[in-house]
Length: 136
Image 1 (cartoon, rainbow, N blue to C red):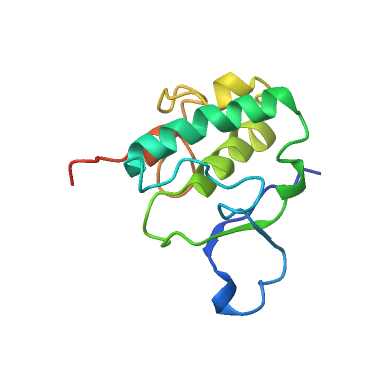
Image 2: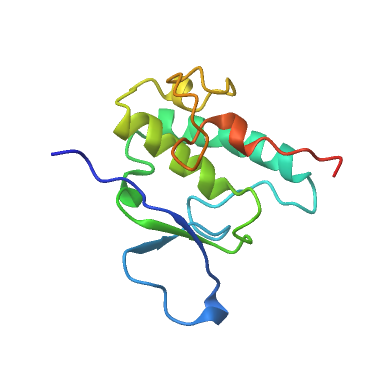
């Protein structure tokens, strides 16, 4: 039997009513929220810093994101925007599904070198998917 991972990211905020079932909050106020505010950083910078921050958190506490495993991740970001929750999903994809135990390797900024799948059609959470062109 394979391990369960986070399923998907959903847009949610407290004004939208009750949190959907099988969902955990990863907004800024949660312990998994992105501490790098968009008022101080571009989206790309914020996500890059979050990737390093998340790696540091997991290395310091191996159980840091375990409570999220198997749940949808709720954040206030628009679903069409790149988001820190996507980086968490990427980690689960690499670490749990692909079985790569090296946190550095799973949160590296090397597109598709993690598992050489070549597929970005919604089946892969390679870091390069979440690179953001801040000039747009």
